[in-house]
Amino acid sequence: MTAFESFYNENVPRLRRKIASYNEALAQDDNALLRPFRAYMADLNEGGKCLRGLLVNLGYRLAGHDTCEESDGAALAFEFFQTGVLIHDDIIDKASYRRGKKTMTVRYNESMTERGLTPPASGDTRESLSESAALCCGDYLITAANLFLAEQYSSHPCAVPVIAEFDRIILNTIRGELLDVVLPTEITDPAHGDNSGELLMTSVYDIYHLKTSQYSVVGPLHLGMLLGGMKPEEMALVDALADELGIAFQIKDDLLGIYGDEEIVGKDIGSDISEFKQTILYAFMKCRAADRMPELLQHYGKSPATAEDVAAVRTIFEETGARRFAEDEMNACFERAGRQMEEMTFIDEGTKAVLRDFIDYCRNRLK
Image 1 (cartoon, rainbow, N blue to C red):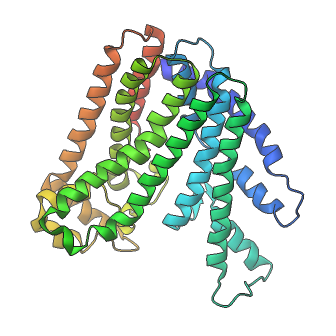
Image 2: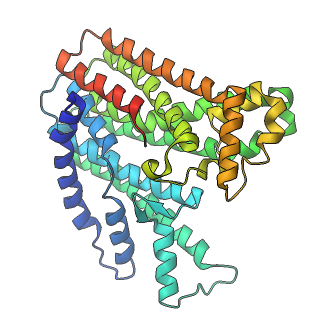
Image 3: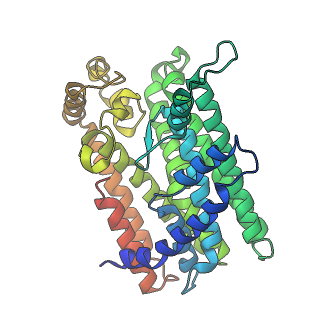
């Protein structure tokens, strides 16, 4: 068992017990019409890997604490925030499943259908009403996460900076998501002219920094370090390492979205193609293989993407060097993160082992 696996087994069961306890209250509401939605939220709040919550614990340990339970309030707040963000993501992506369960929009749509309910407002549909309800639920969980954090640390000396940092993480995540949503359309504006390829690549990296990196790695680690009282100059060094790791994590996701094993990844491998996802692979094509773009666009953005479309996109990415470029960028990020970690003399060897194994986990994961 690796040091990271040991750290995971030491902390995640405790986090899951506390999430389950929180969900008991979350599922309750005085209004009978709201109660089903509260139950939906509680159900969707369970079943995740708790990776971001665990990274809050790890950030607290990086600050020099042997036990991490004092950081559980921030870890749980991050998990609740994540569920809210995922509900919003599912609306944007029109997804049907999340964490092996039906999404909020699907659940309410099916509930209305089973009861024979139709929205009375002209122009409203079950689908649009389901999305509106899900949007409210996502808003609720993100706000509940902030309230939970404030309540947990109301008397803590770092309460104000911790809550402010949490809000900054949320704002950066929303900025990244907004850019992700509008980029495919905005990049087609003729006003960008010959600079559209470089603008696309820059924007893809901005999404990686703002969304994946802040939301998945930098944010939770920083929250734990801040709560643990780490020196600002030391936090800045860990933030730089975490940013490299977050970018590598997203590039790995982009590669798995095209080349992964569908049964292992747990999602339709063609989804990135049918969603016209703006990735480092696609940006490379626009910047450095423009002559093959007409061929790529015969398949990329096609919905639903067939097995033939996936095979064609894979071949084009390989033949143009897009896959190799993405892999090289990802590996360079992993290598820089590893070197930066080894140079951090303020981190004890036991904690370095956990961080080192986490880097390896991110590098070698198949889903």
